Image 1 (cartoon, helix red, strand yellow):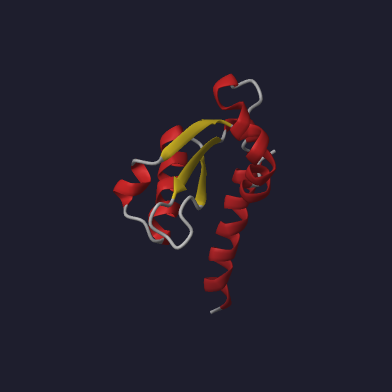
Image 2 (cartoon, helix red, strand yellow; image 1 turned 90 degrees about the vertical axis):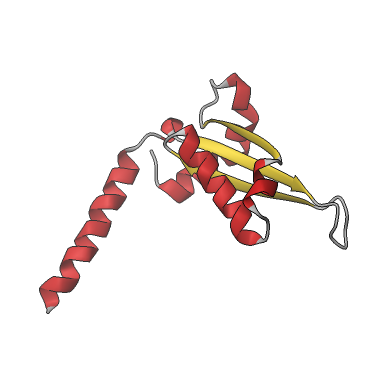
Length: 111
């Protein structure tokens, strides 16, 4: 009985080590900004962020967070979106790197 619980715990430890081995600059960041026009407070902005090892994965995570809150996927896809690598050298997404670099490291455990 004890051996059955040891295997999942060991699997979690190995997965965490693999995540730490990934460089933070390898992660992509995607951001979705929604501006509400129908809430009690028109102009209210909500931001959803996703991280991933590919641009597609980071965008999927951001859209998933957006659509799970209370919006349909189409609303999330039609919103203001930005994506880029988590590196200062990515001139197109330097603002995303500056805003979320610490969060990427804290959440993913990257080095």
